[in-house]
Length: 548
Ligand SMILES: Cc1cc2nc3c(=O)[nH]c(=O)nc-3n(C[C@H](O)[C@H](O)[C@H](O)COP(=O)(O)O)c2cc1C
Ligand SMILES: Nc1ncnc2c1ncn2[C@@H]1O[C@H](COP(=O)(O)OP(=O)(O)OP(=O)(O)O)[C@@H](O)[C@H]1O
Ligand SMILES: [Mg+2]
Image (tube, rainbow, N blue to C red; front, side, top):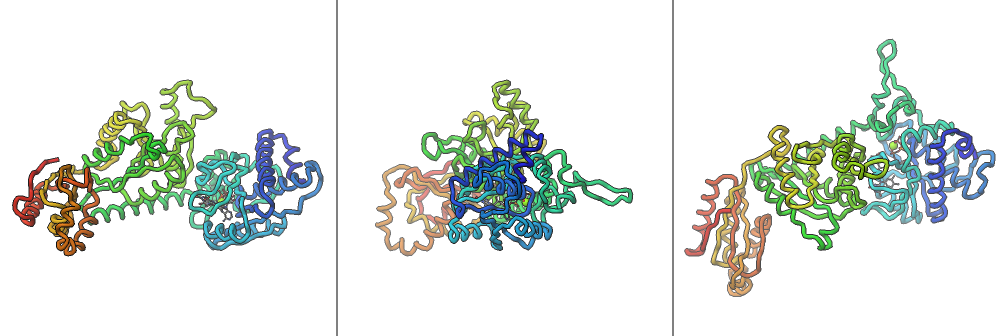
């Protein structure tokens, strides 16, 4: 088999090891699944071209066990899937079809998006495992292993990644050693190929000829494989544009509610919180901190120590909030996936960060084991390290996402103080006028209070008005029964009130005095709204006022 022979005949020991490992993975997959259950995802890119030949070799070796047999393997019964897109480069398209013809591939051309295409493939063709040319440096590789089930929300299948641990150099070593054809774009400076809209030749391969015309050297001459996606930066830039746009849209939604209020989301990462073994003390603390600088916390949630769960929430929250704060799941353990999730949310890879590594080395000395410090991997190209002399390691900021590493209230407190101090010079988090808050205790039930409160909410849409039940023996349910007539009348308002009030509502008990909480930035407005409420309530309904 020509591929196997080419590798065996080469002196490149590293390439031989990579090849052997990849063939091992392929042969395991061929043993685990029937040939009908397997598909090969091929798109004419360099990585999938490598995989094509590895699969040809692997299948040949599996079926004949004749590693040194001469001649080409023409039999390739593995179903090949190609997601054809109108935005693909014509060279990629024609190369894919040329390869199909040359190697006798049975190609299913799919013209829908990945998810729905895979959905119907799995339903109709009983496919259970798909080979992909994903490599560890790819943004989509974050969290994957050689055998990785498809992500939650995707149709169920096994992703098989035989070249996951291959480097850019390994890919080119293989293609050049085996002398197999590859797409012509790689000879024109393209080093990783997406769509015509997001891919340009890699400027690191740019050379000018004597007439000053720009030319590009071939992809295999790129010396630093980590810069393979430099020609795809346009996409990152346009994504950043979309994100910043989305953030400002988020602002405008908030602004309609309350002048210049900025919003933040808090994401805690931890199975231990979800199982109830550990009580999350950082969330209320962070809410108070944000509140103290005039920010509104729009949401606070806990997610599992799972890359996709973190990535999904970060992606969602960062586009609808001015800032997202994350904590938990940062460190060297297998469950510490927060940074990987952030990287996935931004579509970038985790890459070693020398500066961060230096901090960790200072901190842990020789205790770091392994040939690379896993803790020093940070989302590439988007990470800003926030240094402060009181912090042993800098804080991590990825655009509008801040990762806090504090594990208890004291540590979080210190990190927050440093962040605020840093803010003065770097303008990281906009510090706004804090909220002025007041609690008003009412002797009447919620059913009686709801109508005047509803009106108040309509009159003062800029003020956050919430309610809470204090502990005593007035049972609002009994009040509710007593005032059935009033209740019917108020039904419409109850819905409205709940909708408006729920934002800051907190119940200590179902029975007890009703406390209304007012939150506003302008003290004069606060006095005005309280006065307005007093006028709407029966005399003697307000039993107390407390400034918060
Ligand atoms: C066969 C196949 C399976 C995929 N499975 C998943 C998956 O399980 N989870 C996921 O988030 N993306 C999945 N994707 C999408 C890829 O991760 C990625 O978004 C896509 O290849 C586009 O990459 P690009 O933006 O670098 O061009 C899959 C894509 C293909 C072709
Ligand atoms: N349109 C597609 N059709 C089928 N498979 C695809 C498609 N896009 C991506 N894939 C699968 O995902 C893998 C990773 O894609 P990726 O773009 O990173 O690599 P590539 O296209 O092979 O090479 P390059 O990095 O040079 O673009 C591919 O090797 C292929 O298995
Ligand atoms: Mg590609």
